[in-house]
Amino acid sequence: MKIRKITLREIRMRLLAPFETSFGKSDLRRILLLEADVDGVTGWGESTAGENPFYCYETVETAWHILRDHAWPLVKDREFASAADVWDSLVPVRGHNMAKAALETAVWDAEAKQKNLPLAKLLGGSRQEIPCGVSIGIQPAMAALIEKVERELGAGYQRIKIKIKPGLDVAPVRALRQRFPKIPLMVDANSAYRLEDAPLLKQLDEFYLMMIEQPLGWDDIYSHAALQRQLETAICLDECIHDAQHARAAIELRACRIINMKLGRVGGHAPARRIHDLCESKSIPVWCGGMLESGIGRAHNIAMSSLANFSLPGDVSASRRYWEEDIIEPEVEVTPRGTIHVPNAPGIGYTPRLNRIESLTCRCEVLA
Ligand code: OSB
Ligand code: MG
Image (tube, rainbow, N blue to C red):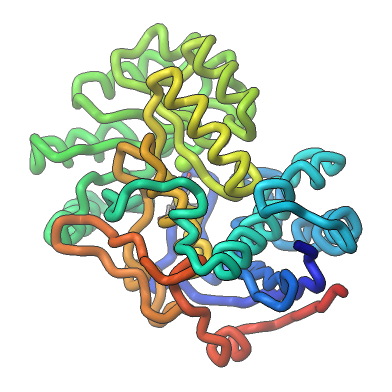
């Protein structure tokens, strides 16, 4: 197969409500979509790079630049046996995994469509239904937090994750535990703490959380190992894990007991599968994280989550939690049991709504 043409697009979509993490607030999302023409069949991908370099160093601007000026020249005119080989051709570009993932995942969608297979099948997934949780942004008012959790539990979601930051950590967790003593609950700090904060983080042990996600530095596996030795609660790494080598280092150093997988952060389906398999061999469960994706990125997350070792509920939830109207048809829906059915249609299994995408597009560049 050859990638004949790619189209880069930036769309802007306003979230139904601003989403706050320890590194800032997101409201108007800028989303880079990539359409790949693979021998006449179109595949879609989404770069999860943000508006600002706060979650990681990538942004929509850097992803656009890397795709146009470096990734496209590496894959153009090249013959690929399958989408699984695209990742290797991008190795000369160091890092920039979110840019790479937009391209790599689009080619997977196209290959699955060429073979008339659901992407989940092509990836080797076995689940027909995936378990879902929600990620709730920082809520300065306790009443609002409790009300939000109540609503999500009512919708059926299987676990609740709340964002924490210094000053809004132990108190909200205590309040939630008093109100909901039994729910599967976890927190995500997005690197807001330092190892010296270990005594404070240790106070969270009292609340039998499923895990604490990424408490320390975004690239600091070593300090997480030191912290994990002091905590009973499992650490889950998100920001720190960029490839299978990082995953292996984190597991062998005992820096975490669980890994959050994000297609953008690891560079696409092939590297995600490699990390998934490694974790499985080490009995480390993984789950699919979210980056406030549009329906395209969400559809890829669902396909990836069909792999066997995605055994914990992910941050993959219904379109209607984020958007007035999504850009795919049908929208992603969650069952009253808190699951998403993995679609059986070819490729990502949801149809991009071209007119809507066109109307949201603020820039577009075709590379051929
Ligand atoms: O750390 O998981 C994270 C959103 C933006 C950046 C980082 C993270 C998140 C989320 C939201 O937690 C997950 C979602 O609902 O998409
Ligand atoms: Mg996280």
